[in-house]
Image (cartoon, rainbow, N blue to C red; front, side, top):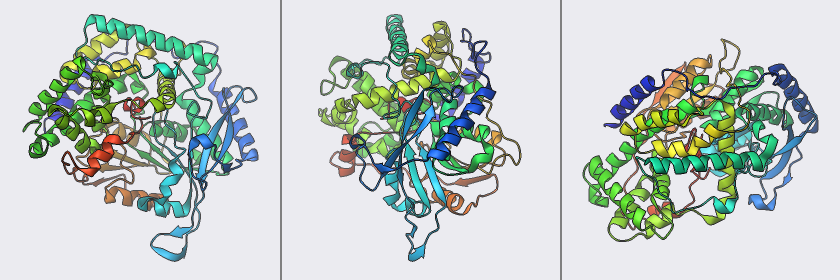
Length: 560
């Protein structure tokens, strides 16, 4: 495959272009800001208060659309951990208690091992629906031993939601998405980014700076205390691995077991500007994987016998949509968003190939159904996008000089055009951010400081490139890395790979881990579907939700 070569070229390019720190960056912290000691004390106060209060679980709010067997409650955390007695915000928590059932032996009563807290990534994703997963066969053993606990992190949904613009204005398609934008288009997007950053500051006010990854880690510590757990059992995916690693660094003595699925690179120098550049490079390789799969199934889809031929047909669709949007709603931007998801999940490949095939044969309906924004989701989408932006912009310094962005991404787009500029526009508000930035924590633990952590990664994951898992493994002493070889699905826990799932079960149920590293062969590629394939129709109609990454727009960016 050519994809590894493409990624290597892009990676080499970035090493040259980014050998120095981004110029024009904002300062990480202003003189006189509260100290880490203040934050540690505030976290201890908040956790003690939460432990005493606990969580009163009862019927979930109607708007959450959860069945009656899922119970909900709230836990109070300080908006500002340097002022633990000041303004409080409430995080909504959901739970299904351990069933005590062994799915393989109905007569055996399984002892409870505590609460398993899950975060699906983002930033900006909620796990309030996570407890429902216990009914799925792959999860039933865990559901027997653990209370399954989900929650909406600060800023998300019912947990003191953040907003940056009127949700009615969030879907403004159909939109353009030039692969190599003109100077005029760049200036248009700069103006939009500035307006969005102003909107975040105006609509959220002085509270905006408190929505960051370090506070997400502190909130997790308070949630653990409120659940009555002395030590945390946690599973995080994508971005959830990053603030899970922050928790592990800050509170190593309060860790029981942790699973990091599709690990973000925690190197402070990567957070978040460089991470997004490397992510764009990696998506080029995964986009090639998709096109090569489509080409292998030319007899089904008729889109070309080589990846280049498939690309030419995709570009033909892009050109036509710029003139006449599919269904009046799907232009180039919406097409890009829909096909970016092929880089996340190969389960989506058949439906996307089918939609392109149908469009080129004169039927635009499958593509319109696949890629049209869902108006009813505008409020949730706007909120998720706002949280994503706030957390990433607050977490670290970003270049404030447009020339830096333009230089780095113009170079990158020459070898990795698929996702590069789309990622720029997603993150550009950080160049004009008005809130105080954080200094990224140096994630690192020494021998014996932290119980062994299980890290999962697919070698060809584009949203969180594999080098990030290697770096996480190096920094967390005693951790174990399980690799799915020659696979690129983002988020591999309890997916189609029985080998990967076996390692998770052994760890979470028995505490057993291999030594340092293990590998599993990749799961099979998806089977092609024909235009009338039922599964393809089902996938084309569903509202696809994500990661690290949101209905998959915001989490499609780092970490997705």
